[in-house]
Length: 230
Image 1 (cartoon, rainbow, N blue to C red):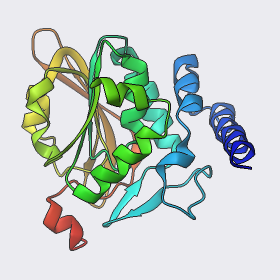
Image 2: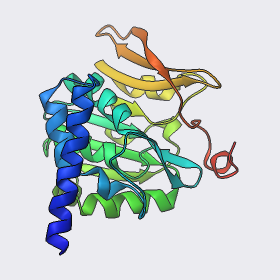
Image 3: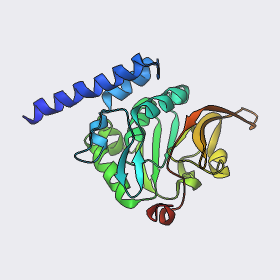
């Protein structure tokens, strides 16, 4: 029974990915492959429908982004998620996107998740252990840390790719500093009205910024402010 359920979930996960491709959210074969391997159903709370294209609450006034946003961010970052590269996931939540990053950069690369809610960090580790990325966690090329993501995670910087899963009032300088020349960051910026910004650090250290699309994310804030719902 458990094996039939697992295979059924894999089929629904693949259908979700196929639908996102049909809708033109992304066209990358690499993104499709990694989203098919990392079953979103393993990364949402129980009794939550994982395969519909909608954000889901995960407790602690946090959400897991809708699948189309994950697909879009993976597509935007794919050239900076090649084997051997370093990737940082700020506000890693349930661990889904960090797991995707780890498969894309491979065991010779490094995928780092930073989450300031300890319970979510623990939840994400248990989710990853059930996923295709479990071996990367065991080997240490994937790691989840409890901390203020606005400060990044300097230990493994510089990063080729940085994803921020909550909306900043302004782009944190610490994250720009930890972005490798030639690297890219995807971050929602704004308060009531937000834009998903694509930030490229040029080889000379200068920054290029463009808006990708209008979005709506929970705010990138302190742990206490988040728990108060502010």
